[in-house]
Length: 150
Image (cartoon, rainbow, N blue to C red; front, top):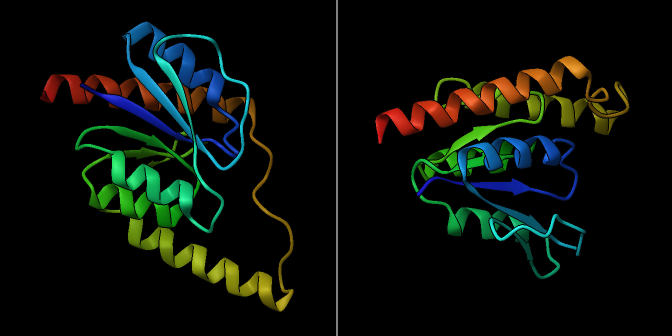
């Protein structure tokens, strides 16, 4: 059965995922390094992983099944999940696919290099209302596509 996994530590669209998952009767697992409050619903679970670099990422990759959905802004994790057969959506509604993941990895690596040299500073811009709307639309589309193809 289709399952949604959230890379939850810094995910700004958890409430949106809950709303869509409730409508489609889907299970949601939030994966994090620290405890956080989640709604008390039988279809929502919290997986707190041991401390360690990439421990949450590793847990997600080990537990996804083909056609599950992963919500993350972490590009290396997105790449690993795509390799495992999952669908991946970023918090702004961007779908990571086999066609665009290489470019996303290259862009991430370039930005990391530029940040390390001080040529650019800061991170991504704050999430806008239009990003949330695009995310909801993309999540809905991906769920419907997976269900049609199952």
